[in-house]
Image (cartoon, rainbow, N blue to C red):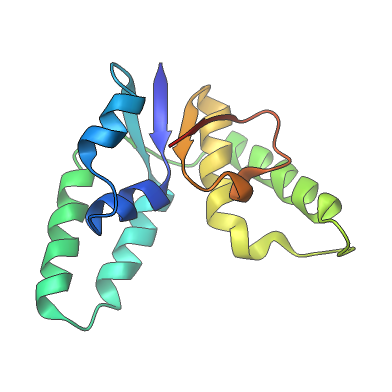
Length: 139
């Protein structure tokens, strides 16, 4: 099995809310990948951190994550992302024409998972509802 680990899981590990062993038990034996989108989200967190010690800890975590195979974006990823964004816009209950922009990062990561045939490990199922093509692993 091949798995992309959602940014929220990586942040929960970095913040001590989840242990690596909890994550490992869910994806034991899987090949683990990191999205370039996740790297961008983590880099943002480092850049806006005001506390030097916390910033150093975040940088250390970023450096460790960067050793995983990194999935980049391709034209086919963009096609899947566009399809997902349209799906989200059309399916927002009670909010005709809702804009999925606040979920763009999640949709890019989901597009990478679908493109590669990977499962996506997350604890935010609601971020990925209405995307039946996506294989979710819930933590």
